[in-house]
Image: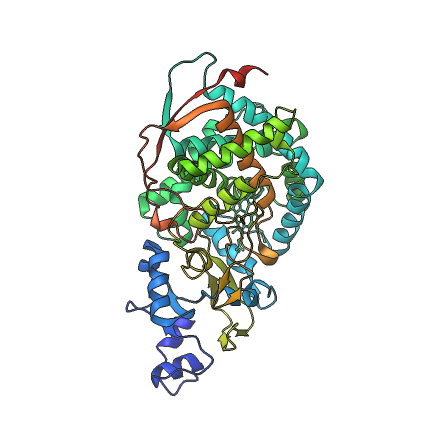
Length: 492
Ligand code: HEM
């Protein structure tokens, strides 16, 4: 409709945005509008190629709020973290689900009704937070132990060489799969390594699926990979002896009670595989990579881990989420500050006046989208984080070793100084589970493996710029590591 209105003759009733354009001045309440030169597509190509670069160019041109046209849609981008609550705290005018449904359809070929999403989220909260998290941590630990043993041979003296991204992603994916979807290996006839291989093919096409920019041959690949994953995931959660987690069994049961057929259920299970596994492996990669390329940081984290293992008698001291690891927490927060780059997007379902922290007011129009990009600000904002490109493992630590939470912009203390998990009602439900899993993984790898860079002078690889906006970034190349198990891994 918007496209059509753009070309309406003057005498037809037009909305204020078009009037202001025609007369070359803007109504006070409209954010600056930048339509780009290509009709309909607008800025879609530049946006898709490297959204971080594009948005920083727009910020320089227009300031902290502007509206761009992207593939026929108007997207208002807000980059002032002092004003983020106006978007995050308004689930009434700004709807998350409406936008998520479009992606769900494009990526998973799935249409779930609105209320299904709310029910699924409530169930997830119940299983991934509070007391149930203790059970999950224990299951993660059991599988992690077995997976690390399976990676190497006892008494093996040779180093094993591998890319760190594949090492971290494949191990954590298999770990998450066994914990939540599959139980013991081959229990439901599905080898986690097969699921990982197919999932990575799917993952590589994900951004193009979301943007609906697949080429014909990629479209065919996407369809066949999805089909294969649906088959592999078919038994997951179906019965108690599938070895799946109580969460997945409950989710499947909920879908069945809602009348979802077998096909819809499989598609929904793939959606959950992506939601629970898509970010953890890449996050662990960036953290380990920054530690290995910053010896001071690695030493500090190792020192904290060994102090804890000396104090605790158990061989699994980090299983207990109450054990405090402020150095590790800061090192992880810093890795995520540099590499977590989700868009926080909402659909405007009723017209809204956006009140900015500086007192200005802007109109958000029904049918448009509003998008926050915390990677740009606060995460990479030099006014908030000194030398933002640099990895400083202790950036989130005070001198006395406690967590640092005071960061400022424009002389005012910030509520949001880094936002890898989103925030507000749609913030990440799996945050604590993800942190616990990454913490156990890094602890076990550094404690039970000899683990080092193949080239001690290697640098972190560049990021794949096409993934800005899709959660955790992924590298363009890889960082090569070598490892072998210490005998203590096999002692228990
Ligand atoms: C390092 C790992 C992870 C990162 C960086 C991450 C990040 C995020 C972010 C940024 C959002 C908010 C999206 C928005 O507001 O638009 C989100 C939502 C969500 N995350 Fe995570 N996540 C991670 C791991 C997980 C895990 C392990 C689970 C499940 C066990 C999970 C479950 C969810 C769910 C269900 C939502 C949607 C919440 C809703 O519907 O409102 N995440 N995550």
